[in-house]
Length: 468
Image 1 (spheres, one colour):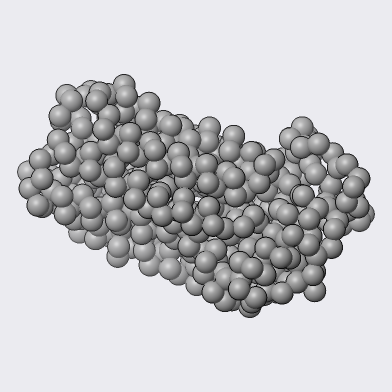
Image 2 (tube, rainbow, N blue to C red; image 1 turned 45 degrees about the horizontal axis):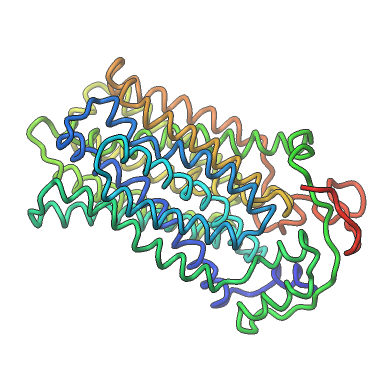
């Protein structure tokens, strides 16, 4: 059996667990670094006497870096290989998590968090594409979803770390530095694991034309669980110009990037501002520790089950269909929070609706946007497509985190939630541009390797394909 067919039809085994760890621990780090800043910035603003605008910049600048990192490093992963970029972005996250922890001033912290964002952004396409290219056909949604679900563990770890440090009475001037520096610990583990992993077999086979090398690497990485033969042929490589001028690929990009953009605007604006939102609901006497406890409870009770159920059932429900369920449900929660009189002043009803919005985000577009962007493109532009989608999404996240406090200030929490509900409705409509990808091979979805009628064709090794 050829290597691509062998991967598509492989049974679940420890081989897939290894791939989940290598890809997923990077995403654990991404989530920790992105969401812990909402806690840290509350302490930083007090220590450094920052304005609301400066605090918003600290909260959002990593997302601006992630926008550039995803677009640039996603493209580079298609040009020089997944492994090289996976190692590079893990190194970036390690170095600049430590640098952020020792930042001597506001300007340095903003700069270090921006550079950290470059690594975080690059990890989005690399983590997703590596797992999708190692995954089998029937369980790909579950496997890539499990990588994404590491976001939940990273977020919960950040809340717990903050609670432990604050409850232990550690000086607040040290707490935020420790919290930011802890992001280097999983980065170091990720870097070590990625240095030992082989290149993606699909990249070797379809882009490099090294079918024999692909077969050997997957057999070694799987400890013999996946045995395949290699055929030296390569799909025609797609240049960036051709990618951006192809109508089918552009519509796909509008679907993957557009849905992810509107989701991230709504999600990150709420999630990063969550400690302040909950403080507002709990009242002026509430402490940051109480806010963290409530956020941890809401996230653990509502969001974590959403991640788990999405991973368990998305291949059965359908990736596109689950997104079409999650967007309207999440938007409905935002509408009720905005329109039910006095609900934001009632702790229990507020937390119930706020938690439900988290649940339908995870059991829906937060997971599916990540998964589908790694499924819809041919191998030679898969990381490019995912990187552009993730980068544009992080631009939406940057806008959400930066603008949410401004909109809340101008129009109240109700106005910000109404705008988020509108974004959820836009996401529902944009999802209609995408195909159903569940339980189809990557080659079938992207029409890769077809000798006629598709975007791709096969060329013999030794014949120069179109330059990327």
